[in-house]
Image 1 (cartoon, rainbow, N blue to C red):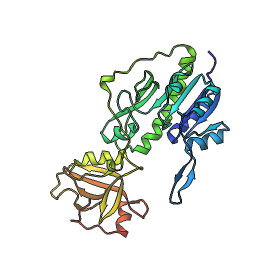
Image 2: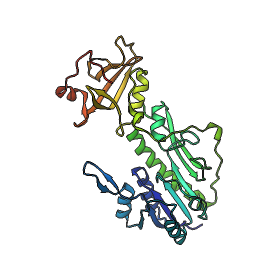
Image 3: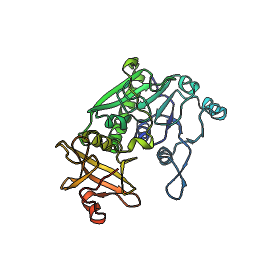
Image 4: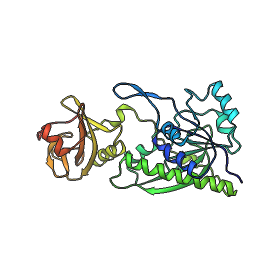
Length: 312
Protein backbone atom coordinates (compact mmCIF):
# COMPACT_ATOMS: atom_id res chain seq x y z
CA UNK A 1 0.00 0.00 0.00
CA UNK A 2 1.48 3.42 -0.94
CA UNK A 3 2.14 6.05 1.70
CA UNK A 4 -1.00 8.16 2.29
CA UNK A 5 -1.23 11.85 1.49
CA UNK A 6 -1.40 13.46 4.94
CA UNK A 7 -2.92 16.70 6.18
CA UNK A 8 -1.33 17.46 9.56
CA UNK A 9 -3.17 19.45 12.23
CA UNK A 10 -1.32 20.58 15.37
CA UNK A 11 -0.33 23.69 17.27
CA UNK A 12 1.95 23.46 20.37
CA UNK A 13 5.40 21.99 20.90
CA UNK A 14 3.88 18.59 21.69
CA UNK A 15 2.96 18.19 18.00
CA UNK A 16 6.37 19.11 16.55
CA UNK A 17 8.14 15.71 16.94
CA UNK A 18 5.26 14.00 15.12
CA UNK A 19 5.42 16.47 12.23
CA UNK A 20 9.18 16.10 11.94
CA UNK A 21 8.85 12.31 12.12
CA UNK A 22 6.41 12.23 9.23
CA UNK A 23 8.83 14.23 7.08
CA UNK A 24 11.74 11.95 8.00
CA UNK A 25 9.53 8.96 7.22
CA UNK A 26 8.96 10.20 3.68
CA UNK A 27 5.23 10.78 4.01
CA UNK A 28 3.71 13.23 1.51
CA UNK A 29 2.45 16.14 3.61
CA UNK A 30 -0.01 18.16 1.57
CA UNK A 31 -0.42 20.82 4.23
CA UNK A 32 -0.02 21.78 7.89
CA UNK A 33 -3.00 23.31 9.66
CA UNK A 34 -2.23 25.23 12.85
CA UNK A 35 -3.78 27.97 14.96
CA UNK A 36 -3.33 31.63 14.00
CA UNK A 37 -0.50 33.66 15.49
CA UNK A 38 -1.53 34.95 18.94
CA UNK A 39 -0.47 37.89 21.15
CA UNK A 40 2.25 36.85 23.57
CA UNK A 41 4.59 38.33 26.13
CA UNK A 42 4.58 41.72 27.79
CA UNK A 43 4.53 43.55 24.48
CA UNK A 44 1.57 41.41 23.30
CA UNK A 45 3.14 41.08 19.87
CA UNK A 46 1.90 38.31 17.58
CA UNK A 47 3.86 35.06 18.02
CA UNK A 48 3.63 32.03 15.70
CA UNK A 49 2.79 28.64 17.24
CA UNK A 50 5.63 26.08 17.44
CA UNK A 51 4.12 23.92 14.66
CA UNK A 52 4.15 26.88 12.27
CA UNK A 53 7.83 27.52 12.99
CA UNK A 54 8.65 23.85 12.41
CA UNK A 55 6.61 23.74 9.20
CA UNK A 56 8.39 26.82 7.87
CA UNK A 57 11.76 25.20 8.54
CA UNK A 58 10.60 22.06 6.75
CA UNK A 59 9.29 24.03 3.76
CA UNK A 60 5.68 22.86 4.14
CA UNK A 61 2.45 24.57 3.13
CA UNK A 62 0.88 26.25 6.18
CA UNK A 63 -2.80 27.01 6.76
CA UNK A 64 -3.96 29.08 9.77
CA UNK A 65 -7.75 29.34 9.77
CA UNK A 66 -9.38 31.10 12.70
CA UNK A 67 -11.97 28.32 12.66
CA UNK A 68 -11.84 25.02 10.74
CA UNK A 69 -15.64 24.86 10.62
CA UNK A 70 -16.00 27.83 8.25
CA UNK A 71 -17.22 27.17 4.69
CA UNK A 72 -14.02 28.69 3.28
CA UNK A 73 -11.73 26.29 5.14
CA UNK A 74 -13.94 23.27 4.45
CA UNK A 75 -13.77 24.13 0.75
CA UNK A 76 -9.98 24.21 1.04
CA UNK A 77 -10.08 20.88 2.87
CA UNK A 78 -12.11 19.30 0.05
CA UNK A 79 -9.71 20.61 -2.57
CA UNK A 80 -6.73 19.11 -0.70
CA UNK A 81 -8.53 15.73 -0.48
CA UNK A 82 -6.18 14.09 2.05
CA UNK A 83 -6.03 10.31 2.42
CA UNK A 84 -5.65 10.72 6.17
CA UNK A 85 -5.67 13.58 8.69
CA UNK A 86 -3.18 13.39 11.57
CA UNK A 87 -4.07 15.47 14.63
CA UNK A 88 -1.79 16.30 17.57
CA UNK A 89 -3.04 18.87 20.11
CA UNK A 90 -4.60 21.07 17.44
CA UNK A 91 -6.86 23.00 19.80
CA UNK A 92 -10.20 23.17 17.97
CA UNK A 93 -13.17 20.81 17.80
CA UNK A 94 -13.21 19.28 14.33
CA UNK A 95 -16.37 19.05 12.21
CA UNK A 96 -17.66 15.69 11.02
CA UNK A 97 -16.46 16.34 7.47
CA UNK A 98 -12.82 16.44 8.59
CA UNK A 99 -13.24 13.47 10.94
CA UNK A 100 -15.12 11.23 8.49
CA UNK A 101 -14.12 12.62 5.10
CA UNK A 102 -10.63 11.21 4.49
CA UNK A 103 -10.46 7.70 3.02
CA UNK A 104 -8.32 6.46 5.90
CA UNK A 105 -9.96 8.61 8.55
CA UNK A 106 -8.62 11.01 11.12
CA UNK A 107 -5.85 9.83 13.50
CA UNK A 108 -5.11 11.51 16.82
CA UNK A 109 -2.06 11.33 19.11
CA UNK A 110 -3.30 11.47 22.70
CA UNK A 111 -0.89 11.51 25.69
CA UNK A 112 -2.68 9.10 28.03
CA UNK A 113 -3.72 5.47 28.19
CA UNK A 114 -7.25 5.92 26.93
CA UNK A 115 -9.95 5.65 28.13
CA UNK A 116 -8.21 7.24 31.14
CA UNK A 117 -7.73 11.00 31.03
CA UNK A 118 -9.85 12.09 28.13
CA UNK A 119 -9.69 15.83 27.61
CA UNK A 120 -7.43 18.84 27.22
CA UNK A 121 -4.86 18.29 29.99
CA UNK A 122 -4.13 14.55 30.38
CA UNK A 123 -0.45 14.89 31.27
CA UNK A 124 -1.12 17.44 34.01
CA UNK A 125 -3.93 15.48 35.63
CA UNK A 126 -2.08 12.17 35.55
CA UNK A 127 0.68 13.79 37.62
CA UNK A 128 -1.64 15.77 39.88
CA UNK A 129 -3.59 12.62 40.72
CA UNK A 130 -0.46 10.68 41.56
CA UNK A 131 -0.40 8.16 38.71
CA UNK A 132 2.76 6.05 38.47
CA UNK A 133 2.26 5.08 34.81
CA UNK A 134 0.84 6.78 31.74
CA UNK A 135 1.42 6.47 28.00
CA UNK A 136 0.35 7.45 24.51
CA UNK A 137 -2.64 6.31 22.48
CA UNK A 138 -2.93 6.54 18.71
CA UNK A 139 -6.66 6.78 18.17
CA UNK A 140 -9.09 6.93 15.27
CA UNK A 141 -11.13 10.05 15.93
CA UNK A 142 -14.90 10.19 16.19
CA UNK A 143 -17.25 13.01 17.18
CA UNK A 144 -16.80 12.38 20.92
CA UNK A 145 -14.08 13.66 23.25
CA UNK A 146 -11.15 11.25 22.82
CA UNK A 147 -13.62 8.37 22.55
CA UNK A 148 -12.62 6.79 19.22
CA UNK A 149 -11.16 3.35 18.58
CA UNK A 150 -7.64 2.62 19.79
CA UNK A 151 -5.16 1.88 17.00
CA UNK A 152 -1.97 1.58 19.04
CA UNK A 153 -1.00 2.21 22.65
CA UNK A 154 2.18 2.11 24.73
CA UNK A 155 2.66 2.51 28.48
CA UNK A 156 5.54 4.25 30.25
CA UNK A 157 6.50 4.60 33.91
CA UNK A 158 6.34 8.11 35.39
CA UNK A 159 9.53 9.08 37.23
CA UNK A 160 9.10 9.73 40.94
CA UNK A 161 10.19 13.36 40.55
CA UNK A 162 9.22 13.86 36.90
CA UNK A 163 7.53 17.19 36.15
CA UNK A 164 4.91 18.07 33.59
CA UNK A 165 7.54 19.60 31.30
CA UNK A 166 9.76 16.52 31.40
CA UNK A 167 6.91 14.06 30.92
CA UNK A 168 5.42 16.21 28.14
CA UNK A 169 8.63 16.00 26.12
CA UNK A 170 8.95 12.22 26.63
CA UNK A 171 5.36 11.59 25.56
CA UNK A 172 5.72 13.85 22.53
CA UNK A 173 8.66 11.74 21.34
CA UNK A 174 6.81 8.51 22.14
CA UNK A 175 3.75 9.75 20.25
CA UNK A 176 5.82 10.55 17.18
CA UNK A 177 7.27 7.02 17.16
CA UNK A 178 3.91 5.32 17.72
CA UNK A 179 2.33 7.36 14.93
CA UNK A 180 4.88 6.04 12.43
CA UNK A 181 4.34 2.51 13.71
CA UNK A 182 0.57 2.85 13.29
CA UNK A 183 0.94 4.18 9.75
CA UNK A 184 3.32 1.33 8.87
CA UNK A 185 0.80 -1.22 10.19
CA UNK A 186 -1.91 0.48 8.14
CA UNK A 187 0.23 0.22 5.00
CA UNK A 188 0.82 -3.48 5.75
CA UNK A 189 -2.91 -4.02 6.25
CA UNK A 190 -2.43 -5.28 9.82
CA UNK A 191 -3.76 -2.33 11.84
CA UNK A 192 -6.55 -3.63 14.09
CA UNK A 193 -8.69 -0.94 15.77
CA UNK A 194 -10.34 -1.84 19.07
CA UNK A 195 -13.11 0.07 20.83
CA UNK A 196 -12.50 1.76 24.15
CA UNK A 197 -14.14 0.57 27.34
CA UNK A 198 -16.17 3.72 27.89
CA UNK A 199 -17.22 2.72 31.42
CA UNK A 200 -13.57 3.12 32.48
CA UNK A 201 -13.25 6.68 31.13
CA UNK A 202 -11.86 9.44 33.34
CA UNK A 203 -11.68 13.12 32.49
CA UNK A 204 -8.77 15.56 32.25
CA UNK A 205 -10.46 18.95 31.80
CA UNK A 206 -8.72 22.14 30.73
CA UNK A 207 -6.82 23.74 33.61
CA UNK A 208 -8.25 26.90 35.11
CA UNK A 209 -6.44 29.62 37.11
CA UNK A 210 -7.70 28.19 40.41
CA UNK A 211 -6.35 24.70 39.75
CA UNK A 212 -2.82 25.78 40.62
CA UNK A 213 -3.63 27.33 44.01
CA UNK A 214 -1.98 25.33 46.79
CA UNK A 215 -4.28 24.29 49.63
CA UNK A 216 -1.97 23.96 52.62
CA UNK A 217 -4.60 21.86 54.40
CA UNK A 218 -3.91 19.04 51.93
CA UNK A 219 -1.46 16.18 52.46
CA UNK A 220 2.11 17.24 51.58
CA UNK A 221 2.28 14.38 49.05
CA UNK A 222 -0.76 15.74 47.21
CA UNK A 223 0.76 19.24 47.17
CA UNK A 224 4.05 17.86 45.78
CA UNK A 225 2.07 16.06 43.05
CA UNK A 226 0.29 19.32 42.19
CA UNK A 227 3.63 21.11 41.91
CA UNK A 228 5.03 18.43 39.58
CA UNK A 229 1.87 18.40 37.48
CA UNK A 230 2.04 22.14 36.80
CA UNK A 231 5.79 22.69 36.48
CA UNK A 232 7.13 24.68 34.72
CA UNK A 233 3.87 26.10 33.45
CA UNK A 234 1.36 27.30 34.52
CA UNK A 235 2.96 26.49 37.94
CA UNK A 236 1.40 25.82 41.31
CA UNK A 237 1.25 28.92 43.49
CA UNK A 238 0.58 30.37 46.91
CA UNK A 239 0.91 33.89 48.33
CA UNK A 240 3.58 35.62 50.39
CA UNK A 241 2.60 38.96 51.85
CA UNK A 242 -0.10 39.37 49.23
CA UNK A 243 2.29 38.63 46.32
CA UNK A 244 1.91 35.56 44.13
CA UNK A 245 4.59 32.96 44.82
CA UNK A 246 5.06 30.23 42.20
CA UNK A 247 6.47 26.86 43.23
CA UNK A 248 8.33 24.78 40.62
CA UNK A 249 9.91 21.92 42.53
CA UNK A 250 8.94 20.41 45.87
CA UNK A 251 9.16 17.19 47.85
CA UNK A 252 6.96 15.79 50.58
CA UNK A 253 8.25 15.06 54.06
CA UNK A 254 5.96 12.72 55.96
CA UNK A 255 7.03 13.66 59.50
CA UNK A 256 3.94 15.05 61.28
CA UNK A 257 3.58 18.81 61.26
CA UNK A 258 3.09 20.57 64.59
CA UNK A 259 2.49 24.02 63.10
CA UNK A 260 -0.67 25.21 61.34
CA UNK A 261 -0.90 24.42 57.59
CA UNK A 262 1.00 26.97 55.50
CA UNK A 263 3.39 27.91 58.30
CA UNK A 264 7.06 28.19 57.37
CA UNK A 265 9.01 26.05 59.86
CA UNK A 266 12.54 26.68 58.60
CA UNK A 267 15.10 26.05 55.87
CA UNK A 268 16.81 22.73 55.13
CA UNK A 269 19.31 21.55 52.53
CA UNK A 270 16.30 20.39 50.46
CA UNK A 271 14.57 23.77 50.55
CA UNK A 272 12.05 25.89 52.40
CA UNK A 273 10.06 23.77 54.87
CA UNK A 274 6.33 24.49 55.12
CA UNK A 275 3.74 22.70 57.25
CA UNK A 276 0.87 21.01 55.38
CA UNK A 277 -2.32 19.33 56.57
CA UNK A 278 -0.27 16.16 56.85
CA UNK A 279 3.52 16.34 56.75
CA UNK A 280 5.70 19.13 55.38
CA UNK A 281 6.45 20.43 51.90
CA UNK A 282 10.09 21.12 51.05
CA UNK A 283 10.11 23.81 48.37
CA UNK A 284 13.16 23.56 46.10
CA UNK A 285 12.56 26.26 43.47
CA UNK A 286 10.23 29.23 43.57
CA UNK A 287 9.53 32.65 42.08
CA UNK A 288 7.91 35.75 43.54
CA UNK A 289 5.94 37.85 41.05
CA UNK A 290 8.14 40.34 39.23
CA UNK A 291 11.33 38.35 39.91
CA UNK A 292 13.07 35.36 38.32
CA UNK A 293 12.87 31.70 39.28
CA UNK A 294 15.45 30.73 41.92
CA UNK A 295 16.54 27.85 44.11
CA UNK A 296 15.18 28.32 47.62
CA UNK A 297 18.64 29.03 49.04
CA UNK A 298 19.25 31.87 46.58
CA UNK A 299 15.69 33.15 46.91
CA UNK A 300 16.03 33.46 50.69
CA UNK A 301 19.19 35.58 50.32
CA UNK A 302 17.05 38.30 48.75
CA UNK A 303 13.71 37.79 50.47
CA UNK A 304 13.79 36.64 54.06
CA UNK A 305 10.98 34.33 55.13
CA UNK A 306 11.12 33.80 58.85
CA UNK A 307 9.90 30.67 60.70
CA UNK A 308 6.34 31.25 61.80
CA UNK A 309 5.38 33.23 58.68
CA UNK A 310 2.26 31.86 56.98
CA UNK A 311 1.90 31.32 53.22
CA UNK A 312 -1.41 31.48 51.43
